[in-house]
Image (cartoon, rainbow, N blue to C red; front, side, top):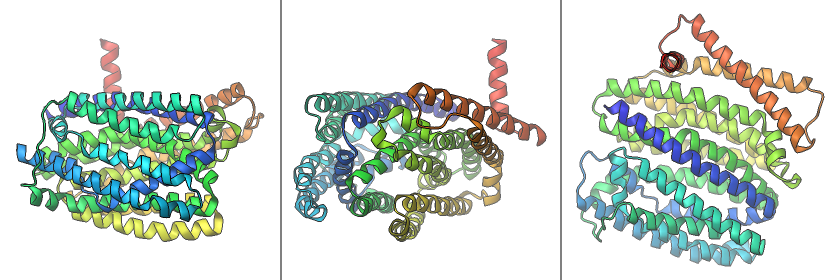
Length: 490
């Protein structure tokens, strides 16, 4: 029964995430065609300020509502009240920081931009806390509807403003529009009104404080990276870094977040049965990584063609960012699965310590690498930081559920070997192709398509070959063949 609910929930989230991320990707590409890298860099500075302000008072009460074994109406009232208070505080902090950040970057346009974006945390804070009841019940179709609805509205606003004005205001206004739509839909799809109240504050604080501190570490890492890149390399290079990173971020949102969301709900419901938790974690790790790794590495290998096809020449350097960011995302997500399990088990303090160590290691490394090697240094720092994160995550989950580090590596061993074979094969084929990158769009499409099909073939052949050589153990290969045989017989 639980397996069926997880699969149904994942299917709904995958559908919603696919549609919403496709719209989001199109929105980014259209905006990049209509605006300049400097515009994206300017908005990235303002968004980073919002991220830092939000991180300071982070308290993920929505996650707590899902993880708690039992909830009452007072829990939903307290969660909503806390979110409203947080939204007000973040908005005030942004208004107070608008002028100083403009002075720091020497651009007075940031004052109005930051003040406008100060409305966004207010909108997020007032969203209906009762909507989390759907997540507790693993009924994810409503969340999928909200995701798609916000992306459609946001894209419409961005396109309208960009076409009529050609201004960077298209980006912040689209973000604000998404907040308005999400607020309205949270009440329209779940017409239960929360009330003001803090009677269950201690319960939420006990669970959420460590999780919130962990989110703070993540947010500060990303925001400080953006601000430092902007100050050191300029708004234009920050815009290129931001857009290149967005491609990788969308991979995470589409490939991993639906699985993580459903796994968190499922593990929370069986958190007292560690044997089932361990078995579920290892199966999820193997299946998800067999999809995530080849896609991420493949996009990294094809970054030149992807950027050349989708963006104009002034964005060419974004290919470098994507070449690093996509594989780094796969490494990060390999460890993120174990972190999600620990959070579902309620061990949020250990998750915070892990994120704190990772952030404290990465930030000085990033600063030093950026000063010495520029944008390339920032990207290499991300790779090293992701490897550390993955190793620490494996160690954390091994203590929590008894899955040794060797067990965790072994379940993804065939995927790692197949991905390595794919990488070597694509690099070899690229070196033997006569046409060079930088041709017209049709030539880039043909080149990218040839490399993609060849790489996918090598990956699948290697994966199944290693599985057969290992005497066909239980795994994703067996599941895929069983599904294929069932479809053929039908």
